[in-house]
Amino acid sequence: MDRRMRLWSLAASYAGVGPVTVEHVCAAAIAATATDGAAIAVALAATPHETIYSSDRIVSEAEELSLTFGEGPCADALRGDLILVPDLRSSQCMARWPVYAPAAVEAGIRAVFALPLQVGAIRLGVLDLYRGEPGDLDREQLLDALVLADAACALLLDSSERDAPQVPGRIPEPSGLQHPEVHQATGMVSVQLGLSAALALTWLRAYAYTHDRRLRDVAGDVVARRLRFNPDDTARGSPPDGSRSDDS
Image: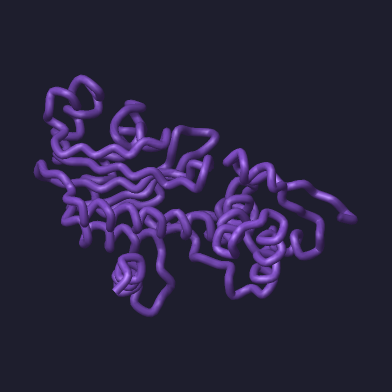
């Protein structure tokens, strides 16, 4: 079975009959990488980041330490770096994160693997995986983690109401492709940008995310020709901006 399908099926098995959320992606990541805990943190304009899901108390504490001290694997990964730390007690880690590393070790964390969540130049957040004992990820575990990080990105970009009150440990449920205007808008953006349908949908989602809007509302603007995407943005790898018009 294709790796992506296998891992999505694993996440779906944790969701049961309900929709897959980042909680289920984290559960799949823990199982696939033989780690002990996981968290998702999102990048915010007002604060460095906010943890929207953590699998247990120790992970929550480690995430809080990173936010409090402004350092650690999570803080570095939010800048776009893949951070793989098999042992926080190493001299390199203690020198790199002199406040965070000893505090995290005291909290019960020995290994951290922080995977950036981003689409092109758009940095959404980070998937953090934790172990209570030292040890690295092997090649297959790392590949699985990267695929599941992509799945977390898709869920974040497709969340329906980012500013609504949040249930602890969950983000809003995915929305989007059941709405016909999203399919139609995807085809239009595909033509505008000269991209595949899959990449065009990614740009639609990224625009909705960066402008704090629902995917289906953005799609409605595209279909009504109130919003058009600029091919120059794709060439520069810039976040999607788009141009608004009443008659284009």
